Amino acid sequence: MAVPKKKTSVSRKGLRRAGQHHKLYAKSVVKCATTGEFALPHRVSPAGWYKGVKVFETRAEKAARLEEEAGETAE
Image: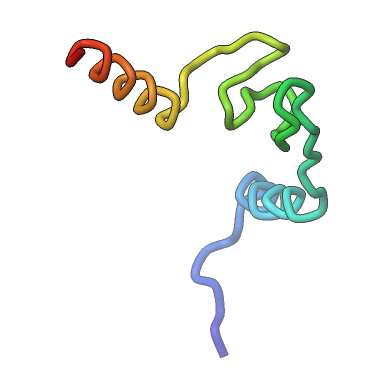
């Protein structure tokens, strides 16, 4: 039978027990008002919107923009 070599300290025991709380609560997901996509609250949506403001450009948008600019310069 396995026997611990040293006594588990109160703080270590508390840290071990504290790690269980994240399993109890599911993450709440909200729908983005601009795009309708699901995202975590108070986070930027996958489409790059936050509170109705475009924060960053997605890879697909950037590729489309670069392709469009390349087509304009070729003409």
